[in-house]
Length: 222
Image (cartoon, rainbow, N blue to C red):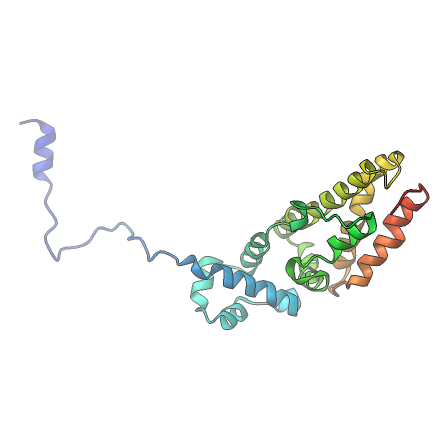
């Protein structure tokens, strides 16, 4: 008989009721069916109150879920908020540009998008987040990737389309990259400077008095 077989025979079998293996046993699988509710509730709370006043306990109370369930899935508030932001996806206009017949109408359609409940609610959600992002690189990165950069792309594509359609003179092409960043940049700056949300009037003012004003001197149909 080979040495390998002998070693197998020398290994005692564990008797019923004997000591169990010291290896950790797998825990109960986490039920992800409530994730959507928890993440949506997190966004609701962010729209209602300042970021620093939102807690995992608040989310647990409103959703009726055990705090241990939340802490098991998201050990910190930052982790939960990051997941909530990622869950919303990018603005829908990134996939289907509005086409309302004029550049101003198209840009207004982006501002008035029902995404996240409209301009006022979006602003309320991100008001506290932008302040918190000043001390959280991961939060700043997610907001930039999921919100700011998609909006810049949407505005850029709308401006480029207006040029292609002859609504805006072609010589303004070199200014498109800068103009596309105006609304997102000014919004980010204002929100980061204080926790007060911006209202729709602010976005319309930036659109009319900055973006379109910069194009009016070039002629065209805005």
